Image (tube, rainbow, N blue to C red; front, top):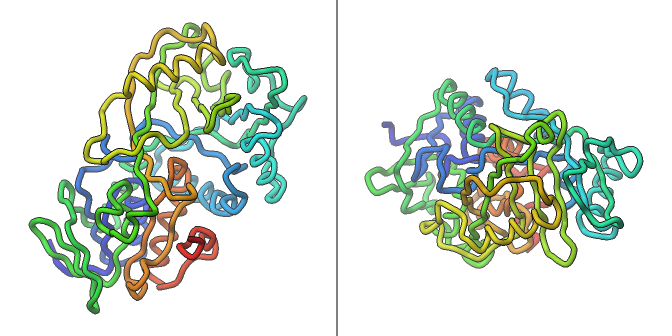
Length: 376
């Protein structure tokens, strides 16, 4: 391998692989390094499906990023001839005064995102499989759906390779020195020099950069797959993705239509902090109890027992919003993408594009300005 590059990406999972593709596409001599071989089961992108939506309840400022992301998802599908985005629609169920529904309406109103409310919601979006309290409201976002994470990363990897990107996998970065003119990236067996470095190391970010030790917390999250008693009712043409905010409980449960003959359900809320090197392969029993309790209350008689489970990692920022910025005191040579807090995958192509442009141009993006470190 060569030792001199224009841009090195440290961490080639979801955001990192997208950044690798866009950097290589720009003509920059690009190297991506990862301690595993992506896609893999050790980080944040495992799980086979991720919801994509635009009426963003977390904050309206994400919507312009999502509009660009939707365009880039279509472009990637077209260039790769791979189907990555499945438009199933998304039903939001919750208390009308709760964070979920109020946030969805706010983003939809500010950015003219099409949503259906009350009597406008089609019957299949209110599925009789889902039993919610009478006072719950349902909002339907027809242009939402899901993307497939592992296939996305494999596709971006192939596209980056065609653009002459280089890869070093199963190699852990142990030091990044940005004090001199070039940035020096060291692994246990190699040392590389680069004009710019993009760090998208997920749960291992604060290991590489102690600057983030107090602002990032890693948690292990559980994912479950169930066998439906009536598979026909859960097919994508009959059943959308969904979010439900249970009464008296923080966070939300979410799920998908039938994919590969199983229905996936999970809970979106930061769990107990964990060392990322000690992530469990399967969900702990306590999480199984919680998801079974939810199903008994909100989707009774719909499923046989849990067929399989997995875990993935959330890297949570203190406000659960992303961090996209230059590393302080790096003279804009080190670009950071981290703290995606369990809701980042739908943004993969636009974050990759932004990180690439920051490395090439040395300035931040207006689209992601609200995600800079200046807010802390």
